[in-house]
Image (cartoon, rainbow, N blue to C red; front, side, top):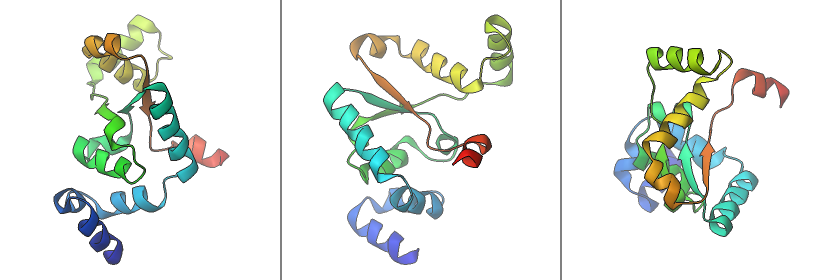
Length: 141
């Protein structure tokens, strides 16, 4: 992995490469599905879509570092933002208001859409990307 990190430091901003967990950057570089990323790039380019990230990765990576990960696939210019964190009280209130079946992810995405209403009106399409898989999905694949 040291060779990979060194190579990435030469090509990309060394500060962003060195920020955070080196396994994250190696995973983004080697393990993200190239076909899926190519389709995502095609959707962004042809439809004018932008990416808002929703993933556990947003908790420990800055938006700039996340853009670095997407730059490996020519997508950094389309990464617009990441979903906000919401507190337990907000989740509880939303579940009470909307029904207890509402997932925390939905609450975070809705909060982002509400906080960025001006952007939502300006742009026509957003893609909310979840870079990690939960346990159930992993068992199916």
